[in-house]
Amino acid sequence: MVNAAGKFGPYGQPAPASATGVHDARVLPGRGQTGAELVRSRIALQVRLTSVSPGDRLPDAGVLAEELGIGEITVRRALEAMCQDGLLDRRRGRTGGTFVAQGWDTIVPALYDEGEAASLSAFHLLLECGLVAHAAGEVPAGRLGGLQALVDEMDQTEHPGQLLMLETRFHLDLAEALGGAGVRELTADLLGRLCLVQPTPHLDVVRARNRCHADLLTELGRGALDPAVQAVKAHQNTHPG
Image (cartoon, rainbow, N blue to C red; front, side, top):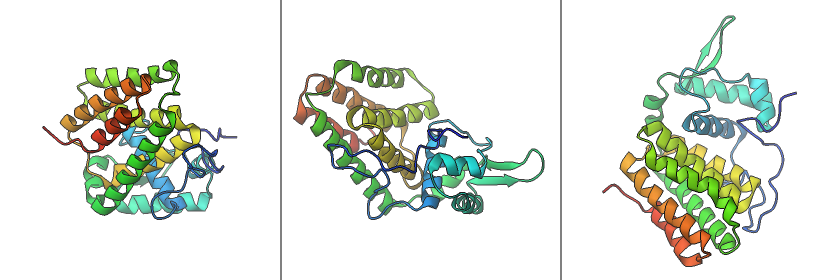
């Protein structure tokens, strides 16, 4: 039996209710994700997190279905659609399977969707502002230590892929620290979809956003609600330069 908390999951159970009013981790802007969209977003997120890389073999469809809590037929159809898009490669034979395409980074830009990216980004901003407003003044100091370590590591790294991976981890871990596991799953959905519809940010932008991460942790640590929310908004509005 595959652990339902695998790297592409967990799914299949409603997220616990949170004080922010988020009750189902699959509720996203406009409508919930279909099963096929969930497969796409979770694979895209795992590529961003470097859990899988171009050229890597994905788990079998049955394993993915169990980890995501959706039907195996749905997973197979989603993988086939991603193969048709050029995101994945299907290989036959004893060493075959479904692999992340070597050209992933050159194919993804063709999928960018400015309108969807704007909608998802706005929802993510609303979510994080709500989490900060709810948690300000009530976050134990020890809960922010891991987040601060990510900020410090981002300051030190020069590798573009590592920098993007660490930023993604920061937002996932922030969601869990402030809202619990269910909110982390919602954030995973948002970030996974954004990986496919939003252009990869310039590294100068990522570094500037990391200063906003640091400011956010400082304000959360001292329980300052308004400055903490402003740090979240500044992150969203960061541009090169």
